[in-house]
Image: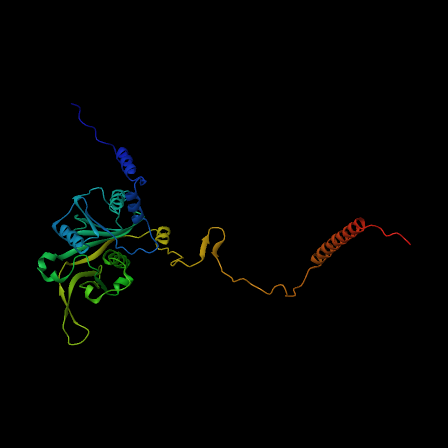
Length: 345
C-alpha cells in the first residue's frame, strides 16, 4: 500500500479558510442562534472565556487554567488538548485561536504555555469581531490552587459576580499592568447589571501591585470569600477568608490593539433609547413627526396679499360677474319669449 501523503501548508490553510466561511442559517433555530451572537448596542451578557493550552504545559499551568475555568463557571469553554499552532505574538499564529474563538463564541481567552525562557506563562487577551484584539503575558509563580484551601470557599456560589479590587499605582503608570488590569476586569466582571443585592456579593478578587526596584512590578492575585456576621446593626460585619487561587505574576510581552481597530471597538451607539415619533434617515438625518390640532380663525385674519394674487382675484371676479350677467340675460329672454305680447289700444 502507498504511504499517505502529508497535506501541505497551502492545503491546510485553504481548509481552515473554508471552515471560517460565513454560514447562513436555514432554520428558525439557526436564525435565533445567529441573532443571539450578533453584536448589540448594549452588551449585558458576560464574555465567554476560551481556556486552552499551548504546545507545552506544566502542572502549574494546568492548575491555573482549571481554577480560571472554575471561577468563570458557566462562562468558560475549556479545551483539554494541546494546541501547538497557537502563538498569539507571532505572525499568523493567531489564526487557529481566532477559529476556536468563533466556534465557541468567546470574547476573551487564557492560553497556558511553559518554556525555558518563559516558564509558567499564562497569556490573557480579548477578541473583537472574532479577531485578536490585544493580549499580555503573565509569568506565574508561588501558585496555590483552590483545592489546597480545603472547604474555605464553600459559601461562594460558582459563577457568581465577584467584587474586583486593583491596588497600586503601577496599574496606572505601567503599560503592561494597565492592559492586564483592563483584560482581567473584562474577564471576571460577569454579566452587566443595574442593581446588586448585598447578599449576592459572596467573593472578592484582589490584585495588589508591588513595586520591584530594578525589575518588573509584581502583582499578587488573591481571591477571598465574603462572610457576613451579626453586628447588632442593620449592616452586617464583613469578614474575608482566602479561598484560592493564590499566585504572583509579572508582565511579559504585550500586544496592543491597532489604533483604527481600537477606535472601532470603543465606538458607542449614538441612539441609546428609542424616542417616540423620531426616525433616522440616511439622507435627511433625524426626522420628527408632530401632531398639531386643527386651527380655526384664519378666514378673518388679515394677511398681506401679493400683487400677483390680486390680479388673479380681479380676473376671477370679472369672469364670475360675466357669467352672472349671461345667466340674467338668458332668464330675461326666456321670460319674454314665453309671455304673449300685449296689443296697443
